[in-house]
Length: 182
Image 1 (cartoon, one colour):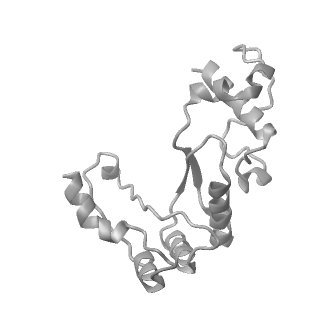
Image 2: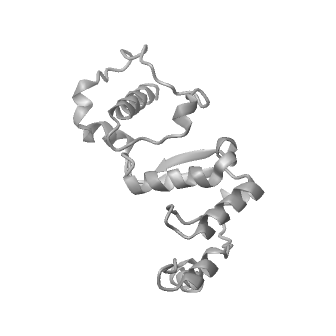
């Protein structure tokens, strides 16, 4: 029963206000809650850790928890962001993630997952879509990196900016190439 689950774990998962009750926030942030849910995916031995997003202005305990988790468990991270064009708060969170991981950043696998984008509508929603030739097969010589690990080192340290037209064009080209290869 979902309502019962929410009531049971809600007191542990609900983010405390760090301004009103700093000690409650630190206690909340220092507790790891394990929830076991029957899942065929998790039966494969995959562990999922959900950590709160954080900014530089947040309590240092959040950074310490993430660093401890990465150092001890060596997980791959899944960075969730809401919009196809990364908003400034998600970008700030990623920058803080990068700063927190320090030397672990280069050796930690980070996957970016857009939680709201639909591949078929990205081009339709872009004002510049008319400027790109999207005829299947005619972009064979386009400079598009599609192989994992072929990215420049500089690309590893960045996520697209809201005003970065070059990244938007690159993404459109990649999506079109992916569509035509289906």
